[in-house]
View 1 (cartoon, rainbow, N blue to C red):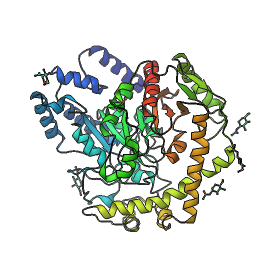
View 2 (tube, rainbow, N blue to C red):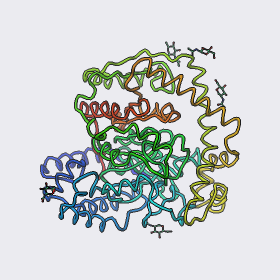
View 3 (cartoon, protein in one colour):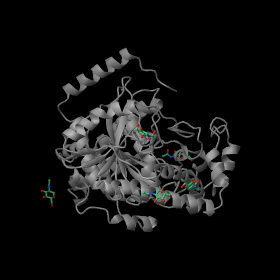
View 4 (cartoon, helix red, strand yellow):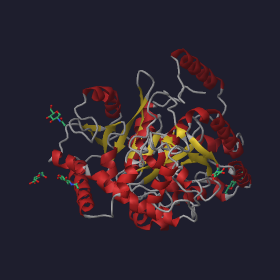
Length: 511
Ligand SMILES: *[C@@H]1O[C@H](CO)[C@@H](O)[C@H](O)[C@H]1NC(C)=O
Ligand SMILES: *[C@@H]1O[C@H](CO)[C@@H](O)[C@H](O)[C@H]1NC(C)=O
Ligand SMILES: *[C@@H]1O[C@H](CO)[C@@H](O)[C@H](O)[C@H]1NC(C)=O
Ligand SMILES: *[C@@H]1O[C@H](CO)[C@@H](O)[C@H](O)[C@H]1NC(C)=O
Ligand SMILES: *[C@@H]1O[C@H](CO)[C@@H](O)[C@H](O)[C@H]1NC(C)=O
């Protein structure tokens, strides 16, 4: 179902909203940040229970139209009450981290509770996960309340190339809250929509190539795609351990950084990658990098001439972003603009290796995930394909054929072709992005929308998407800052500096 928003209706809604904000100098939950919520807890103006109940009410009201949430945690209210008691008793844990903060996690992230973990597919509905995902374990340790599961493009958009973003058999079609006719992007669609519309304080998404950065931009929120392995992927329904990453999607850079601080670090169930990336975690955490003059002295690259890096001789897009470039310069950054990539056509042709590698890696990783489940109706990719055929109507496979699944099932491990593809990807990263960043001493590469996502994806590099404004018709768009592995502290300084200088985000015109 799609909602049609007429301009008059929109105007009335906007007027209503501005009156609403003017009247309430007191604390309001709508648009509240973690810092504001924690202050309200402290001043006894708010309880976690109030917060959870508010979000559940909003989900009940908005979700039939927006389809951003697949399941609400039936134990969330109780868990909030426990958090409130801990706070009342002044328990040490209640003074730190995400204590009492409700979070929605993408539905491909395992939780060992009453919530299902299905990647949006009925094939996994009766599956039982062995344990919380690594990031969920860290969230609980930090005191966060798992409010529910956010909707997604089914199987993180790795079942059907034809399925629209934000569609899954279980979640149905998610809708962009700013403009119903505008692509909400994916695959972390519900994570982005739910925080954009105040159905939760914060959320988690996952990215293999663009799945955090793109929906964040399209729904006017902030998304951080961390360096590969900085956050554990254990218990996340996989595509590829070489590219998958879990990260926060939130209304502000600061909120995203609070969540990042809570979820980074070593996890025994994703030991190799998380051990390797742990060295990047700064002493004292990422919060120290929320500095107001974060853009000062930063060197930012803009590729005006090459595809894969964003602006690619596209005058219209370049014109649209000139005002953003001006903000960056005004805030003290140096823009390095006429960058060259040696042997670009050769490097560009190596990117085709991404799909070749992903389909083979997916089959291996998914089969391993399914084998580890305590119970499951499906135990292999072949089982999932058979399930989809048997329940073709339920899984809509006539409209959205399972072409990626079939392609993946046809692979047979990492053979000669895959090895060549992987070598190409490594070289494309080394001779392309890394060389470009190092030779030009760049702190970040600036790209429009999520157009830099592939370059960041194939090398496991981090990126942050920040709201960049709205088109004439009200459709949001993002601007993305990408950097070398472990450059999150720098990227956070840049993203926060840009956000504070622009404050583009407005809540969506929907109530
Ligand atoms: C809570 O505990 C901390 C540390 O023990 C203390 O500084 C603070 O005053 C306590 N607050 C209340 C309200 O008791
Ligand atoms: C999980 O799925 C089962 C169906 O197998 C359903 O009965 C249950 O309500 C779901 N859990 C939640 C929290 O929605
Ligand atoms: C972009 O334009 C420049 C100068 O006009 C040209 O040299 C370059 O080849 C173009 N790049 C692409 C990818 O078309
Ligand atoms: C470009 O590619 C050619 C042919 O593979 C190679 O000989 C040359 O060294 C490369 N140039 C750079 C700057 O990498
Ligand atoms: C590897 O890259 C070369 C270009 O240098 C390309 O011709 C070849 O098709 C690529 N192979 C794979 C498997 O991606």
